[in-house]
Length: 170
Image (cartoon, one colour):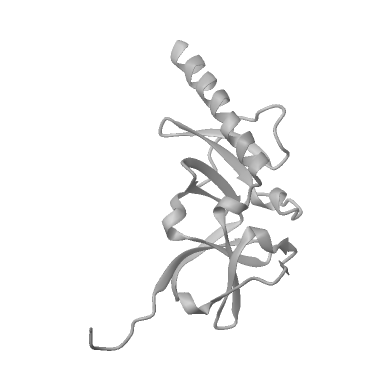
């Protein structure tokens, strides 16, 4: 039996702003944070999918979290970022207003989400953390998109391959 004090597990979060709310992804799901790249708009996709972009040879779908969560659109600013996340062997970029910080919090500070927070249904949420006077909403990456929407993203891989083949032939 080990001696010493029990150390509470910590979570490391990438905190970002969308409108006036603070959200976070677990850092283990975040591959990188980039400035908005040039985006190829695709026809016949859901309205929240802005299109696809090429990041170091990989074609990645870009999703507007404002549109996905029905938050009114605003002009992009120099603070606008794209958070590239990985889930279910897929990379997706989420456009956010600003990435504000990376923080560590004790896992115990994360509470189960209420049925709605900031107008979002709880199925998108992993939990809610109270940090000092701030309320940080933890998003569940794999639940931001329904299974049908995830299938749509998988179908974009066909478009990705076609784009890659077209570019190779040029």
